[in-house]
Image (cartoon, rainbow, N blue to C red; front, side, top):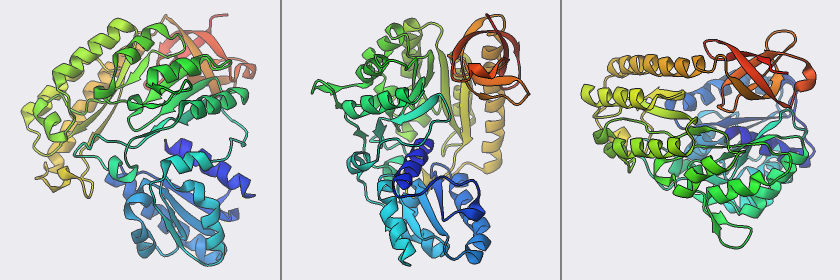
Length: 426
């Protein structure tokens, strides 16, 4: 979502006469777009600001903006902690960036952190910058009403807001006209989408996917990130009936322990999650499941951790993201007794070894099979292109650059640590 937001900010500033620069030293404006989901991500912004300080001292006309969720969460504190910052703008207010830059040029610092999701999307300019990739992100839903006890998203992104379907479909059509072949629909809880449909009725995500699938030029559709509680029957059915919806689903579970899931306020049990995965796999047997995991959550015992390992073995995740619990200020879990860091780190090490085993097994099973690959960029080696399979696996192939932006059948010949090697079928 931050990638999408950064692109929209660049396009907003393009309307104001700015262009994307190649060097910080030559920049008139530097925007740092931030994430607040983990402590490490938050602290990184202050490290980056410290690095920019000499540049600002040598060039007083340079303007520095902090955008995104750290901006939303910390507001004026950012300027107090690092006075070189001229603008603090939250994720619902970045359509105001040209106006804020104008104020900064007059020596006035600004903090804009209002929750105005509908106004933001209404005022964003039409996409104008040239596309460099045949893939694109498209935000359809923002915010969260779930209030997991470890998460700051409801406080930094606000309540759930779904964009009207007509605007989303129009934006997808514009992307198709600009050469985009694959669209990933974005939302903090993207499968909670409940926007006004083109027909005036409320649409869910499945209806939106089908409408985008009707757009000429769009060949692939993905969506992320989903919540198990919002995985509706019609969305599961879409995986069976919509050929353009790719066989990949990121569906975070966070823990395999019912006790910890309850403490996290996840509103589902491990058993319900397992049955949901069974239903999804019946609809699309070849689907690759990806997940998120938090270890070392307050109150997690060794037995709770073993429950997570058992769930991982039962599901067999083809991809995954795992983290040691990071207390976030203002969230309920941050006030609880914390697990010792060394214990949490050791659990994370064990979990990641198991997850890596399953991911490698999923990759190895592709050897000898034919995958469809959308070539997105040049590879690391001369004469090589890289792209993604229908299962979102990285694939590299020795082939002509004319294939860039195309989808081709590729026979997988080798499984490597984090990617697949293939050859063109024809």
